[in-house]
Image (tube, rainbow, N blue to C red; front, side, top):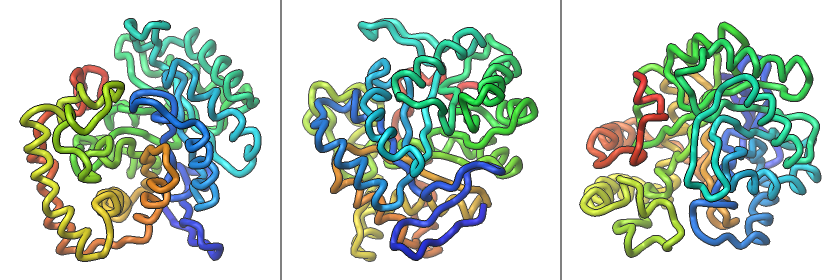
Length: 342
């Protein structure tokens, strides 16, 4: 879990798994650059990618499901320009129809082999640094899925393997088939169900944890109190339980201590939320690399600034009970998450 400091002013680095790549202690989730959060200014998004790398962010996260391949295609020029400077992560498992009305989780070996070829083609690269199984299909034996992923490593198409939204038992089972470098699941001040088993297993096995939605899809920035008023028509959060109706009002009130702590540090609510996630590395003795997503350079720089904020023991105590008071589930349908299989 050793953290490597830098003398060039960029964020520190940490290793993903045993023998995995060194990456900045904060990564960048690229999903929203192509889908889910309304219209994107592509030129601004490209500037954000460059700003992230300049700040020391080196883990760039995408998936074949984001924009049904469009996000991988969008990242391709950036990947080509900086291939040796970045760690490229993408995922398979969520199969979507062109009209997005059909969605299925696929973990079968034939699908995995087809999926990786598609991702390599769209990303215009010959190797993926970190290849995740995006969601788990319990109908397919985990050993079969991870075995097929291991074959991709043997063929030189993938360097390291990752899993997303799996339980601690599933992580142990997979790791016994082939070393897992990183586990990516939702983890934030609002979402702590991964602490039931996945976090402990990751620490035990030396697997890095990559929290997605570490800002609660933006809610932890304090910017939203009413999804119907604060979010555009094309924003998927308008239909997320925590952003709707009375849930949103309840959850906005929970942020009062976050704002107070931020004010005490001359920081923002986002800084506090991300610093809390980063501190989990010390609490659980494992590498933690959150991947907040943004399309704007200003937000990117704000997020990276959180790596320099250290919360006091007293502040951490104040923040501790928040997750237990949150109203609403992470998703309208939790069936594909690790929480459903605990």
